[in-house]
Length: 343
Image 1 (cartoon, helix red, strand yellow):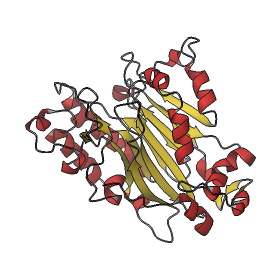
Image 2 (image 1 turned 90 degrees about the horizontal axis):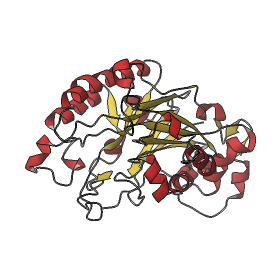
Image 3 (image 1 turned 180 degrees about the vertical axis):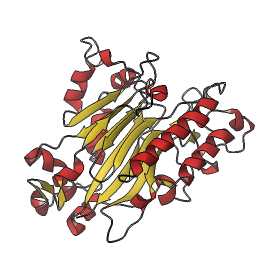
């Protein structure tokens, strides 16, 4: 069954003065091939959902590729996502492997800063009719009643600061005034599970410790391809004998993810859509599983509990999380998080 959308950015802006901060995550499974097949996909996605941040996983680039005159990747993004500032993390231990990127909407003040606020006030995520009041919704150093400074990163880091993990380019972390946002591509345990021990006993533990350190300062959101289908609601064929020996569905990976959530973090989609079934973010292309929707949910937004609670003292509240399964170009689909920033 289709998901019920839980949040309307237009209504929030016009009736409450709130701003909806929207984050999109997508494993693109190789960016060079992706932009050849779908050159306008990211720009269209940014416009469709009025994204503030776009996070990519598995771009598979090296730093030299951005300015390669033959590939013209930087030129591509300057044309298609010129309103965003990009931050890249690359694998240095293995070429053509892993890699993460984060695109953050530029906030230069004046018209640039107010563009999305006007858009929310005029058409939001659901409507196409114009609203005259929207012209006054975003001016100067605020959007509605929200300071533009709340939408600007204070710092961006392309490493965890953990040498034994940082060589694979798996994270980009942006510190915003009200929360930390970490884009992560969690290591796959491998077809033969040769990296299962590293992934569950080293990576998962060290990454959790890092998120807990960040959380001491302000709430945390980590997101991306986490390479685990948490439970029976996140697989199309739960109970199949091979799942216990398949990367992403082993008991060890699921137990490790349980430990991370048990440390005080929340799977936003499952928290907001507790009974949702048949909603996945990955389908095997080799098996032709997308059309019959035989998939796995491998992509997540994981949030500090504080961000899921709503009371008068909360300035930021996670309002909705969902997939965009009609977006093609990868064996994963994009996922979206909508965060209310209150006045």
